[in-house]
Image 1 (cartoon, rainbow, N blue to C red):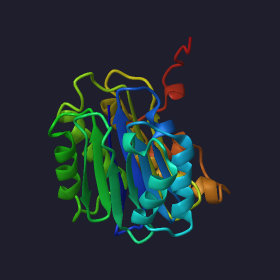
Image 2: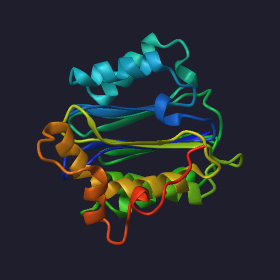
Image 3: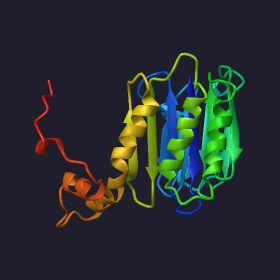
Length: 242
């Protein structure tokens, strides 16, 4: 019902998670990034409490393997979980419990993990291969995660389809530089791509606005400069909202 990519970018130090699933609001339940310390995807049977424990451990500098070991002795439903992590050193680790619903697997890469459950036999492999294919590129981590998510969706994802998707990336700041969610949609990965493509040119604008908005133009003015041919709705015609 879920597949995800958790990664640290060796070039920028950014951490990120991309995930999609058949149930709604996956962005609220599966991914979490601890700024400058690590990232986690907690899936199969989600637990906000244990996801937070994992994040708290990463915040202390605990290793990804150490976090999994700690969770395994505290969580009585551990064999139903699927957990992926990347730690402050860029080390990746993952666990897929014996009770995780089939087809369930995870694959470890250098600084990243791809994991899935109730997915096609090739979903995880396809997402993994796509992420590997961009490792030597200068693409932003968010774009690399998005492409891997799309590869998983193209593989069939899961037979029931998908309903929600999320893209979360942190840089060196306390706030996320990308935090985009599609909570309910028949083709959430396609919709997330549309949202990401719209937002991508504005990443630096919103970073600056969070740090020091002095003299900064309006978002739509920045978007017009950055996206050739784009015009905000209010300069064309009002659009009814109800």
